[in-house]
Image (cartoon, rainbow, N blue to C red; front, side, top):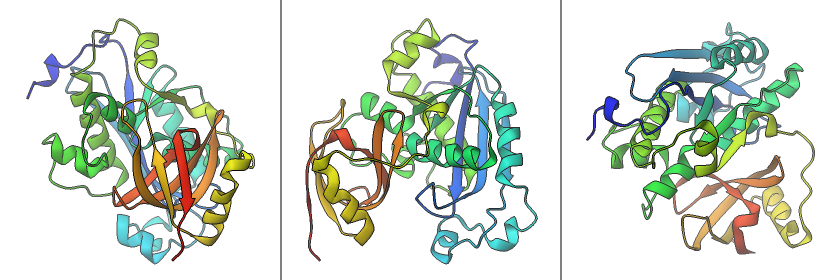
Length: 282
């Protein structure tokens, strides 16, 4: 594989921040961040800066979540609050960085909710999603989970499910995908190449669904499985069974967090990309 110096089709002055969150659950308005990690870098350069902090969520961490990331109540008992950590994180990002996350709407929702609670204003950083990027430049893979991608790309054999180590993996996945980009001369051209979000897109208002999606609210409330046909710009429609966890809005789009039985992991789905769906009786 190419060395880092050979993978920079982007302007060398462009700064990126790959980041990841660990949380107490899946639904941002009801759950909290317990760890935030980030890596600031430029393509083609080995040097980087890192940011990591545990966060006291001011509540107990569920046992099933501890089983995933290993962060316990004792570990966060003396940790700073989300307000303090997010102030430091925004300073770490600076004013001009492009942020990158894996399943970006999930992390944006959590950061946005914590900013709302703290009375802080999110900056207008663009946020790229490595799931979307890899769908475009590595089409046809059976799974786009972070673990599956780092194995496919030969980056790592496993995943720690800790914020900083996962942020390093997100950086490496982005670097490998960037090697496939066409030559890009500007930040605007990059943001036009792939789907981009904004940290400032997060809004905590109640989600209002179009009438045809009303049954999904029932599925979330009753934890009922749903069979969906889902299509993206990079992939033809595929049928999968999901177990909806929550609905939220990001900018003008509405998303559904759900456990996807096809990927065997939590995923975020845009409702306007669900071609059809039906609730499944258990």
